[in-house]
Length: 234
Image (cartoon, rainbow, N blue to C red):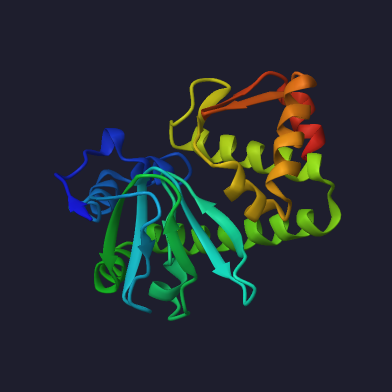
């Protein structure tokens, strides 16, 4: 891991994620920015396993994934952590264990000790509400995702994941209209969607042929947002 200089709020996806939803004043925004004073670069494949109940991980750039390795050696990806997301927040606020976390791409993160998060939420009712809302959002998102895995076909699962990534990146200013960074490999998509890489490749090709979305190396472009939403059952 390599430390870097602090990031300003203008390009800080973590801060932008809070500003886009909660009505926070300048003091609260400054408190959030102060949590990102020591950004660290991590390489793709780096295992990020913070001390239980001691640190949260702020994702400022790049993608990370929460996952579990099964007894068979196969990997299941529960969710992707995108720029602006907070990983391991449950263990900081609630004392719960944190899922395994890995950098799916080269990434910039901040490891924030539990005491700094506690100071932030104790000093501001608005921040406390915002952080608890993020926990609730995460639970709702995962419940919805697992429900789709159980009841959706490959095309619907893939459309839902792509749409979710676009919506989350849009909230933090990481999209260019309907184009957005999508550096998730087909192997990782397979682990997240419960499919084989071959099936993922076939499904992405189908979405491209339908002129709904094109996923190329590191980039996705939505051509037909309405159809994508229908496929994702929004």
